[in-house]
Amino acid sequence: MSLFNMGDKAYVMLANGRIFEGYSFGAKGTKIGEIVFTTGMTGYTETLTDPSYYGQIVTQTFPLIGNYGVNEDDNESGGSVVSGYIVREWCSTPSNFRCKTDIDSFLKKYNIIGIHSIDTRCLTRIIREEGVMNGVITTENVYEKKEELLKEINAFSIKGAVDAVTTDKRERFEAENGKYEVALLDFGEKDNIRRELVKRGCNVTIVPAKTTAAELREMGAEGIMLSNGPGNPAENTEIIENLREMKEMGIPIFGICLGHQLMALACGGRTEKLKYGHRGGNQPVIDLKLGRTFVTSQNHGYAVVNDSITPEMGEVSHKNANDGTCEGVRYKNFPCFTVQFHPEACCGPKDTAYQFDEFVSMIKSYKEEK
Image (cartoon, rainbow, N blue to C red):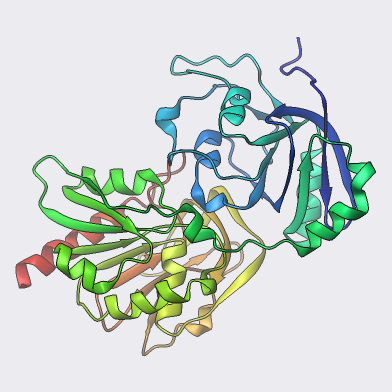
């Protein structure tokens, strides 16, 4: 028996004019975005609810998606902001003791257009060889509006991503017997960052992305957490300026993903767009201090340029074992370290969760020295 219902026709068209025909699931309509791929074998709910995918049409390289259903307890945010979803096969009859609903219903709930039964291996090869490119996912006849859509595709760019996903108010989460006060700057945070901190005795207050150093000082923050998030880091000039002031406060700072990139820019470093990015749960990263390689979960299209981290600024602490790109920075003149990967990964490897332990240890030392 087939694992999916064929459904109505749907299409994906790339900026180079290549068209893939498949079948629709999820919502109906037309959406333009940046087409990317992720290699995760599990964790599709976490992928779909990761705010870092804002403006992107996500391709799953694993051929079967949806077989264990959806349980929204696994969500990494309050919803989904992906622009579209591409899979080889989707399972309409999931089986798992935690399953609450199926992936088709999930996509419809959040108005996400999905397409199945296309050659995702071919699509992935194109992105790997030519680089990430814009495209459209649609349940309308793409051939009838091909030229018009190509103009829109080629004019598209992701703008205002952090503003689109950040919170507009503070939200506090208290740990049992909480010892430390941590401000989590929400650039598109994944909920598991907050959970990992609370688990370690931190009272966490999630704050808007453009919160200032003065506001954090007024809150009595003893640690500053810079979250992951979407878009081009260099676009966030106001946040970068705020971080320049925060690093003068002497409060321990830990940055993940976009937070890592923004802090590098605030200190005079540079970022660059990668050809097709790192997205998935199997990225090898070398901890240069420990001399060990860890398997990490990642989701990013930009990276900090290694040689832009000067000795006066700090040192590159981690590198990607595949391509040598910067995966971490340890700063010299203020208490801060940042990583490009996701130590809070869920669903994903937990090899690097020790990063949170180090951050909490820094906060403890800061409080004792005050």
